[in-house]
Image (cartoon, rainbow, N blue to C red; front, side):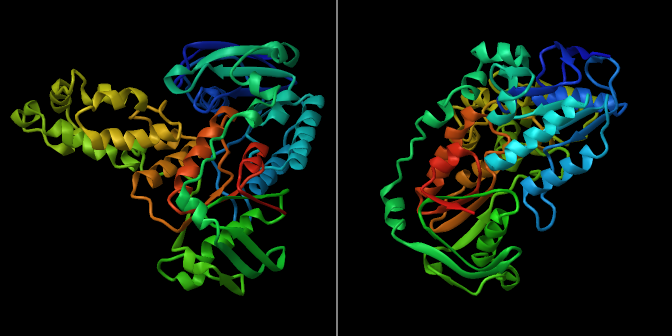
Length: 465
């Protein structure tokens, strides 16, 4: 067996693709967020290896192991530490001839740690273990032996293979990803950091949490300016996530707040911060029918639109008939399908991308406004009916950011994000920074743990551990 043969793959947004993946190599699967990488690697290859029915014809596979990106940090550990622990554990199991699938093993890691991960993966390939890595890190992509890139864009505009070949050929290709990997384009792009006057005024104030004693910190002081993008960076185990947790707890407001305010002696500048929010990357909802549209509340408004149509009233159809989880009989489904708004049934609408749907609701500013926030965080390629469980961790976090923007942004709050670049293509980073700046401009502060140089260099204040 020299390669994996996949024919006519159609899972999610894959456009009936066929591809041969060489075995015994370090192969990088790259492309923009939502371009089809995970659809191929997890929904086709890994699921097939587990005996599940898949939307493709797949050749015989080696014994297959996989580490998914959709994990939660273990207690007392960062996402990076959790990923590293799982990789170390699975490396002990794989042997020559096996296939290892890894999703963003370098997410949140400093350059030194990324180099260690790369060395581990290359060593596995040298031993005859096939390594398939879904990755946005330049370090991994540039050192892979073979590259498969999906694109050209995301969602409906992705799902195609725009390049497959050796790394030597990839260096000469002009693809949406290669032009970032083999240049400094991601660093040179204009990140549009133009803080508002309110943000500039807030930067005169600082927050200092004194006497932090937790995990590897002993009597440590954390101090940073408010009204800023503050970035904590450092190697695995240096305490980035610990400091995020301390800052969140120190400013937490809610039930049993005193239980969160531990691990430090005192705090100065608290009068300038009302409360803290943690924007994580976990699943948006455990409900199987949840979508970003339901999470933001926009689907409620869309259901009102359909229920208020003259046809709906005539057929005595109510708002509840236009739900994702409605259990209707065949007769009801046929009736619902006849209800049209601008010639679109509710099912037609579910198949539309957010970018497309915005134009449909010209007469409903609230729908346009809520969908516009998803556009603003770079998720216009998602369809209205896309299930939340199919989103990557990075996409889920951006949906949460969209929800923050959709509310009347409160002032003087601290928003905390752990590895916000996780799951993001290099071309998505300016959009992320723009969204964080919009939050800051309302006299808020954004505190992140991040090791991507592009974000470190474009933050207002850096803390290197």
